[in-house]
Image (tube, rainbow, N blue to C red):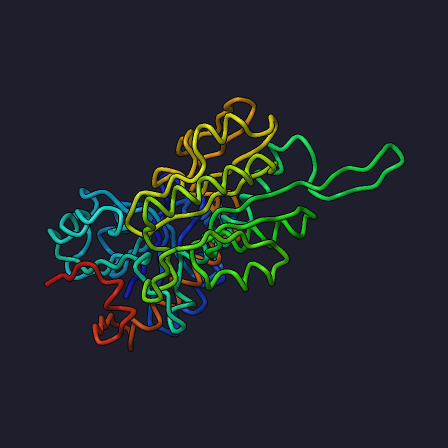
Length: 360
C-alpha cells in the first residue's frame, strides 16, 4: 500500500516527517511525498530520499496513493481525484462546519478527521489538537514578549529595579497550561481564568494564581472541553476580567467552546482602558476571538494595546510541530493498518469517532 504525503498550500508544516517514516515499513506501507512537501519544515526532498521515499507530483500522488495525508483539507476537485476506497486523513473540523461531512460523503473514499479523536487516555498519542495547542501556548507567550515594550522578569540593577510583567491567561486548557509554564519560566506574575474547577490544581501547581468566578457550569462528560456558560455568569466573568486586565501587561486568550463561537471575555471598554504598551495574543481568533477587536491572522494596535489574532501559532515553529503531528498520524495508522491493508474497525472508539465518511 502507498501512503501519500501532500505539500501544504498555506502552512509551513508537513504531515509526516522523515524520522516517523521508519515505522511505515513495519506496517507494510510504502511512502511517497509531493515535491517540496517538507521544505518549509526543514525537511527537503533528499531527507526523505534517504529512507527510499520518492517525491512525485501532486496529481500523481492523489491518483496513486491508497492513503493520503494532509494537514489542511484538500479541495472537492482533488477529493474527486482520490482512488476509490482509499483513505484520506486530515483536519476537517466538522464540529465547526457540519456541512463538511455531506461534502466529503459524495466521494467513494473513507475520510478521517483527526480533530475528532476523543480526548481519552488511549487516544492521547494521537491527539493532534492537544499537540498543536501545547505549541501554540508556548509560542503565544514568546509572541507577546516580542511586542511587549518591557521585560518579563523582575530585575534589580544599579539603575533601579524592574518590576515583573503581569500576565493574565484566559483558559487553562492545553494551550493555557503551556502558556502558564512558559510565562512563569520567563519570570512573570501569572493569573488564570477557567470555568472548569478541575483546572484549579493544575494552575496552582504551575505557580500561577487561579481566579475563580462562582457559578460556572462544569460538564464532566465534555471530554476535557469547556462548556457553554450562562450569560449571567459571562457578565460576572467579564467584570472580573476587566478588573484584572487593567492591572495586567499581557493577556493570552485561549478560551474556546468546541463547536461554538469563542466567548467574548475582553470587551471594548476593557481594551480602551488597559495600559498603553500592553499586549493581547488571542488564540481563539479563528472562532471569533475572546477579545472585542481581534482580527484573525492580523496584528492591530488599538488605543496603544497590541492585539495579535492568531489561532495557528504552532505553524511558526514548523519543525517541532511537524514532528509531533507526524507522530500523532503514525500512532493512528498503527491501529488502522493491519497486515498491509486498511481495517476501519468501528468497534474501536477512536476509529469510530474520527471516521466521518465511509466509502460504501
